[in-house]
Every structure is written in structure tokens, then in C-alpha cells.
Amino acid sequence: MAKQKPAVVITDPHAIRALAHPARQRVIDELYNGRVLTATECAEIAGLTPSAMSYHLRALEKWGIIERAEETADGRERPWRARAASLRIDSQSGGAGRLAGQAIMRTAVDGVLEQFAEMAEDDPWDDVSSMTRSRLWLTHEEARRFGKELNDLVDRYKANRTQADHPAGARQVSSLIAVVPIGRAPEGG
Image 1 (cartoon, rainbow, N blue to C red):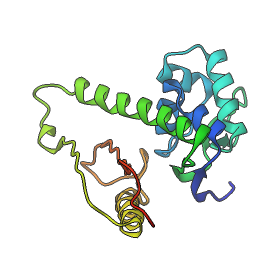
Image 2 (image 1 turned 135 degrees about the horizontal axis):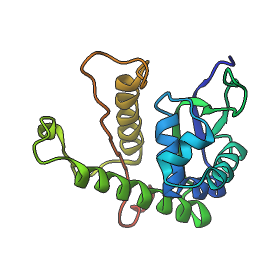
Image 3 (image 1 turned 180 degrees about the horizontal axis):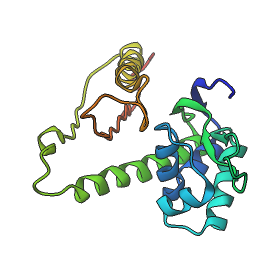
């Protein structure tokens, strides 16, 4: 098996736009959580037909987000896997990159809101559900460092944990982190 990279970083606006499709995001979430899935299994997760899902999988492969895994024992259908341990979107600041970044963020936020709505009222883990929105006054360098530290924290908790390999009693927890400059940049910075 080929060794995976630590992260796939997507900067191309077209690739970012390709990620904005809700069905693709559902499948990417599963694959980047360590699962290896066939097109049929991906279709079930995304609520699509296997042929429609195959189209989406090939598009994700084209942008270097996922790749084919080794064939199954019966050889009928080759499964798919993540190309790396994690996926990071670095949208460009202007034009198509900004629009693509907004599209994927909108889809991601909608997905997190759905997860909040789907939680059972008597879920014993409800006490860890949270969403925080803050406004901070940071310099450009502080904002860059803040985003990196948040990503490093997520990576620390994610390290070596997959659906197949995680501590007993662990449960999937979804997180969404966004660092967005607002207003106009100060003069000279």
C-alpha cells in the first residue's frame, strides 16, 4: 500500500468548488476518517445511485482528493480511500477562489447545523455540543498563528484515530473552525 501524505492542501478554485457538493462532502468525511469504501457504499452514504456516485468519485480523484485503494478479495469493485490523513482548504483571497471558498463553507456549515438538529434530545453527550462565535482583534501575524494553532489542535486529537482504530468509548465528534477577517484591512497592514 502506498504511504499517504500527511495532508492534501487544496488551493485551486475549481477543486474547492468541486468539494462544495453535499454528497461529496459526506463521502469525503467518511474517507478522511479512515474508511475505505466502494462506489456502492459511497452512494448509500450520499443518497445517490452508484453510477452518479462514480461520477463524483472520479471528479474527486481528478483533483487529487481521493484515490483508488487496493482491489477487494472478489475483485468486482475497487474501493476508494483518502489520499492523505487530512484535507485542508486554502482558498485564494480574490475572485473565483473566494467564491469557491464561500460555497464550501456554506455547505460545511449547513452540514454541522444538520448534525445539531439530528441529535437526540436524551443524548448523554449533549453536554459537549457547542458552537462559539467570537470577534478578536488580531494582527495579521497573530491571525495566521491563531489559525495554525487551531489546526494543530485538531490534528493532535485526530492523530492516529480512525473509524477502525480509536480508543474504547470514543465517538465521532464534528468540528468546524473558520477564521475570517472582517471589515477593511488597516492601512499599511
